[in-house]
Length: 245
Image 1 (cartoon, rainbow, N blue to C red):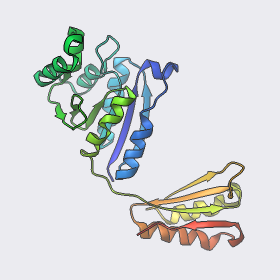
Image 2: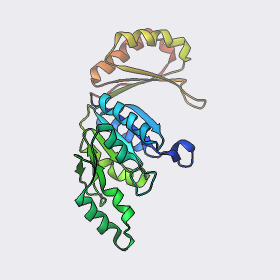
Image 3: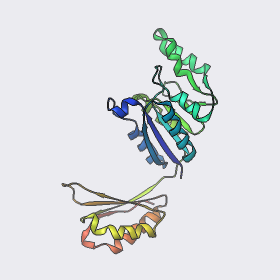
Image 4: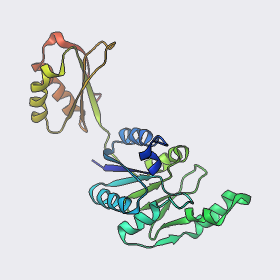
């Protein structure tokens, strides 16, 4: 299973001035293509914090996505921090310089060229979104923080990663979680290839607990579901949705 982490960067996120809108489409992409997102970190603009988080994630996960800190102003420090994390220089890419000149036209300023700076050794990931290419350094993908631009780069990331599609079975129960906790624990231990989640539901639903059984193998998900049904009270079962093979 391909693993991933997301690093959401910006003092404005941590202070509440701006709400993060980028994790939701990223989560949706990873779920769709079968990449196992295992970490989302929210950090500020301090270079040392970005360096530490990038180093940790790049070593532990197959793919790392950063969001934010790649604009033209003093508080855009992501490129410098990623470069420092890997011990490489910051390089101004000539192709990006040309694109920025063309993109900004009469609005061009020298400050805009900061967005042509990349960690030395990076590659440009081109797409047909009409924007400047996404920058990738090793297993780190550097995304803009503006939600519209972040979303526009999602298809480019899709072309970079290969995942393992996950299969889900669902079980809806009219029971309290505490009443079935011991049986969930037993099935979870007996089925290590299946992730079992238990989620209490709010009033107004036709069930009180929603159980999910998730696996890269649909047969394993359904087998765990069958084992769980064997130890539950039939009267508590509202409905069952098996994983499609």
